[in-house]
Picture: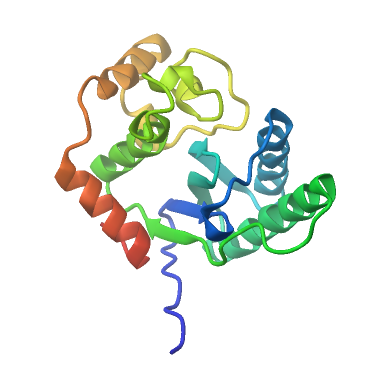
Length: 200
């Protein structure tokens, strides 16, 4: 049965999930996380892409990203995934697949979904009971988006900027979004959209 064609909508960001092969750990030490982010930054510059939110878990990656030419999203993801897989296999003295295969993706087509999706991504370590608050997890965009630490990888989306024209107030408003948990209904819709390669 042929694979469903990936849905890419010009002008809309994508929520992307890339999982490791058999959900085995793909980030084994601190330098692994750093190297992945370095390649992500490099290829975003190469293909004129912008990262709005991200989290690197031990066995998968979430991204919320925009790109000038949506047809280049697969090329960007392949470039990052291949470079990281080659690096990890060399470092560990092994061969074989690091990634599960095709990444999942879902176009983000409205403002409410965009901000909910950012929260969904940055709350992953909390839902996984790795940390109590998103600010305690180093390998995510929360601290950058919340104004707690500088994060040069991030490019703010217009929806995020719309929280406030005043930067300190925008950070405060963004942190305020995390006072409430994402509803079970929204969690279901996000997961159904990303696994089905369709917008919400």
